[in-house]
Amino acid sequence: MFAINPRVSTATATFLAASYIAVLVALPARAAAPLAVVPQLDLDRYAGQWHEIARYSNFFERKCVGDVTASYARNADDTVTVVNACRKDDGTMERAEGLARVVGPAKLEVRFAPAWLGFLPFVWGDYWVIDLAPDYTYAVVGEPSREYLWILARDPRMDDATYARITGSLAALGYDAAKLLRNPPPAR
Image (cartoon, rainbow, N blue to C red):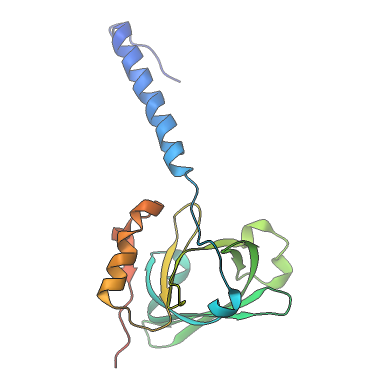
């Protein structure tokens, strides 16, 4: 992998190799830190409509410019019907219906692919509730790789103090609050 330059001293080569190994060891350790979730999620209280306050940029919401909502309805078999909607730039609404299944306390997997593809593991995405107001007025949803993040609220507007408290706690969870895209509140 590396060719040794005969003009580089052994001490320098050892230092460079040790530095390289230290970087390789440190990066995966940081990335592998487990993502904590809230201790308990009551699906009946979580059900209903949520408004997206902010999110990390992602491919599947690239056309959404506002009025982003997610509605959850618990099914008899303990799965959850998920309906996401948003307003596009041309003013039309886009809607996607999916299904979520519980995989652990405050951990769900969601799929928006057709039901007949549900047997494929890669159509399911992690949906972990990592922060939740005691009264279920806001929730923060992420996933272990920390590539996706959403701040949701029952009301389409969130006061600045609550938003600042939430974003201020994200670094401890391994997220970068500077990457959040805040949705414009709907016109009154």
